[in-house]
Image 1 (cartoon, rainbow, N blue to C red):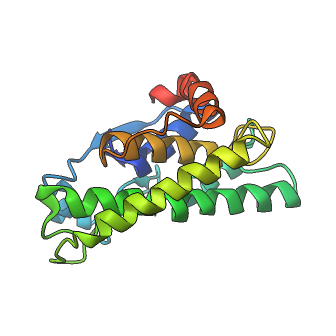
Image 2: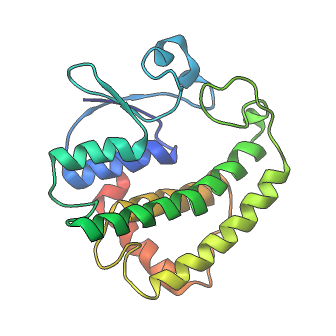
Length: 211
C-alpha cells in the first residue's frame, strides 16, 4: 500500500495513527499542501478531489477519506478493534467520531484556512478553484473551539476515552484535532480542564501518536 500523506496535516495523521495501532507497514509519499503539490496534475490523476490522504492499494485501487480508509483497514485487521465490537459500540463510536469532526476539526480547519496568508485564495481545501478566505470564520471558529473544549472536559469526566472505556478511532481524531488546533491554527490549549489534560497526556503517550 502507498499512502499519500503530509506529516503535519490532521487527516493523513489520523490514518497513520490508525495503521500504527494495527501494526501495519506501508509506503508513504509526502505532498506539501501549502505549496499546492496536492493540486498537481500527477496527484489529481490519483485523487481528482485533490485532498489528502489517499491510499493506493496493491491492485491500483484508490481509497480517499480518512474514515473510509480506516474502515477498510478495520475490516481486514479487526484486532485490536478501533471502531467497535458489536452493533451498539460501533454506532456509539461512529457518533462520537462525527462529533469530533464537526464540532472540533472543522472549526479548527476554518481558523487555519482563513487566517494563514498562503491560503488567502484557497479558503477551502482540495481541488475547488479560487475561493477567498473569510476572516470572520476565524472568529467563529475560535468560539466554536472554546465550546468544543468545554464539552470534551464534561464528557471526559464521565469516561476515560472519547467514546467510553476503550481507546478508539474517536480518540485518534480528537488527538489530531487538538494538536492541529493548538499548533497550526494557534488556538491555545485550555489549561483549566484537568480531565481533558489527563486524557491528552494518556493518548499522546501511546507509541502510535508518534506515527
